[in-house]
Structures are given as structure tokens and as C-alpha cells.
Amino acid sequence: MPASLILMKGITTNAQVERSVGSEVVFTTLDSANIPAGNAPIGRPSGSGFGYSYESWLFLKVETPPDTGVNNFRFWSGGSDPDTGIYMYVGTAYASSTPSFSESTIATTNAIEYSAPDDSLLFCNNTLTGVNNRTTFLVMQLRVDSSATLGTLYNDNCVYHYSYDEW
Image (cartoon, rainbow, N blue to C red; front, top):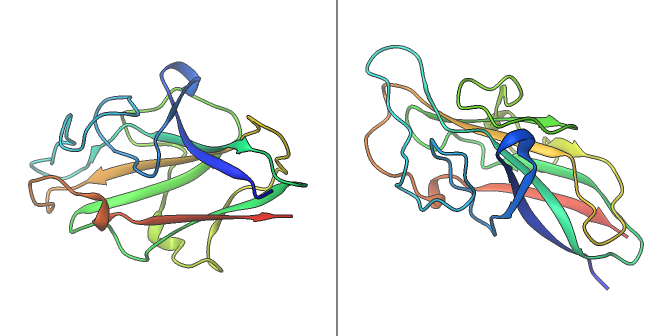
């Protein structure tokens, strides 16, 4: 039987509270998994510097186990920034930490550096075999500079991909 994995987000202290996010991860100024787009917006700085979202500590969790296993979890972007003055940064973490609302020390690489399946970020190579097994964390943070236009950025501007091997 094919494996079924669900995208989860770790929130609060040490990212220990797990929330399913479906296929939509919303980046806001609140440490939450289910805030509607447009609520708790990221401020655009008036001068130099950046406005930041809370880090999103994402992982995949096995809902239906594979016949044997899944591994080689990879992430990549569409190859461009979400919009003018808006940048997505990514990184990986093995151990959880409390999501940050300032410049991330984990999500330090612009996602456009990983722009195709064969130029992707390996965020977990553990083999998952059973229900509730989970990957290590993919940490993402949205950064906004003063050149960004005001308004809500919707999902069609921010498409990211992941893949894994199953056997």
C-alpha cells in the first residue's frame, strides 16, 4: 500500500505542539498553524532591514505506513522570490526549538537556491516505516523589505515542492 504522509507544523515552546496545515502554510507574525491569510501581517520596514514572519517548523508525518519505507525527503522552490521585496529562507534542523520572530539562525538560505528536483535541499534522510514516524524539520521564514508592495500575498505566488522515495 502506498504511504500517506501529512504536512505538519510545530508551534509554541520547542515546536512541540503539532498542527496539520494541509497544503497551505501561512506566514504571519503569530506562532500559529491556522491563521487565515491577511491576519497578523508581516510589517514592511520603512527604511533598511527586514520584517519577519515567525519561523515555520514543518515536518512530514506518516499517516498510512509504506510497505517497506520512505526516505530521501527533498525540498525545492519554483526558482524565484515570492514577489518584489519578499524572500523565503529555508534551513533544516534535527532537534526542535521555539520558533523565532526575529531573523532566523536556521532558515538562512534563500529558497531560490534550491530551484529544481535535482538541485534540491535534502531535509531528511531517515527511513520512516510506521504510523506517526516523522521527518526532521524543514524551517522556513518569510522576510519582507521596504520595496515590497502592501497587501496580501496568496499561495499562487509561493509554490514549493517536496518529494520522497518509497519502496
